[in-house]
Image: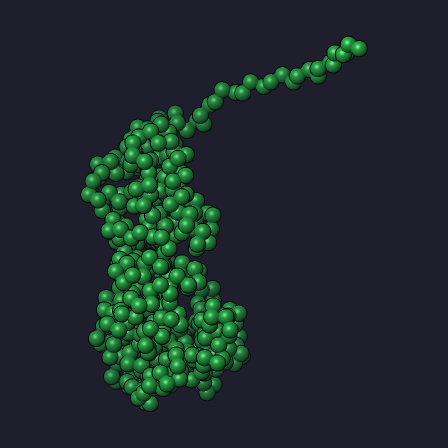
Length: 431
Ligand code: ATP
Ligand code: MG
């Protein structure tokens, strides 16, 4: 952000401050460990705010995923205040305050956007560098991504502090970048995906300028670190908005740059909606399942028609379909393998009942998951429900006799061992 832009962004000079009597956040809603950390920082003369998504969610009457603390104490000062504190991350320098086995409060020192002349030479290092320059609360608010994510709850007087117009945007149910979207998306292209994600999660609309910013900066997302994109994509699945967000991302021209070569077709988005609904019902999402769902439609298209395709060929096709994604995002072999097996499992299920090796397939530990995915596909297309139901019955009640008959490993004829050859006696060559 240029300094003139930053200046204009910082207008008006004074933040909006909502006193306790004018907002609904009560300390009862904040977890006790977070409160302890806030109070202790405060009692040692530091500023101590609840920051980020926690404040946003509480103001919306939602249950926050977690609470983050912002302070003007440096990580080392935080460490001195808490016996159970560990400084983590070479890049992010955060303080983790532990409580018992599972209690963890993340404490971050206020940071600011670095000036152009402070940035390291390599643009790839900008994002991480920017994460580590300490600043004031105001600067910390302005370095954040969206106005609704930059609200502070001050433990000193229980007020809400808003430097960026986040309260107005919460009321208008609007996702708006802090500052020019073009600039903020160029600084960190992953924010484009996050904008669409928050809109979907909260049922908000994208501010017009923010939407246009995504449209114009979409190709930049291809330059973002694959590990971050991979993580954000899994966030979409965890938050049950994968279908909606990727559909929107396609509409805004982001998807083709996000997942290189990914062809988002209507069937894929509809299937992802089904996956999201399944996750909403409580089934935890795994990356292998998400991957198989993302590529199932393409896999079907790549599989030759007809019954006689050998499974080895189907495995080869599944690999081919998944490889570009898995290579680009450095997906671990175990996850790749599971995703491929799910696709091949769907293929086996689609061939119908009574094929060779059915009992072994029915008892395979991955078949229930393959059937889950296949059933979602069937529900989405509206054809094949009989077949899915029949497989469901087979999985629930595999007949014991059938199983025991099939449980035996297939007996192959023992290989005839060759008799060791007698060493040939060299016939003496005639002289
Ligand atoms: P949730 O945890 O519910 O997904 P969140 O808003 O807490 O939502 P996090 O990813 O946990 O999101 O990030 C915490 C906060 O850090 C955000 O609210 C935002 O203020 C800031 N933040 C996160 N990512 C970025 C980014 N790429 N650019 C600027 N600020 C960011
Ligand atoms: Mg969070």
